Image 1 (cartoon, helix red, strand yellow):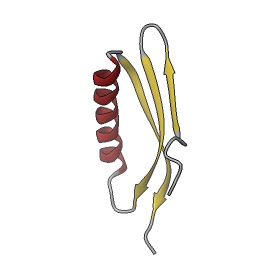
Image 2 (cartoon, helix red, strand yellow; image 1 turned 90 degrees about the vertical axis):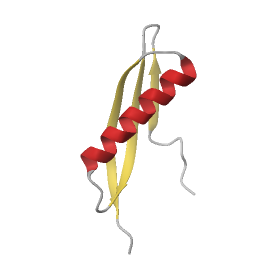
Image 3 (cartoon, one colour; image 1 turned 30 degrees about the horizontal axis):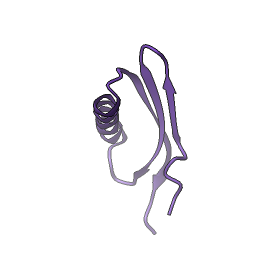
Length: 68
């Protein structure tokens, strides 16, 4: 099992929250579509759980997962 906290950075200021995520995307999926869905889901989840405004959710694609 991979370390789930690796690749996640959260910066909290008095005004807002900024999230940086590193993802591996499975081969065959559209990177832009996956990134947009992840950004929206993370933004909504953080805002609902904390009540803080999310200013940014930055996605870095760390790799492409190819099943051998």
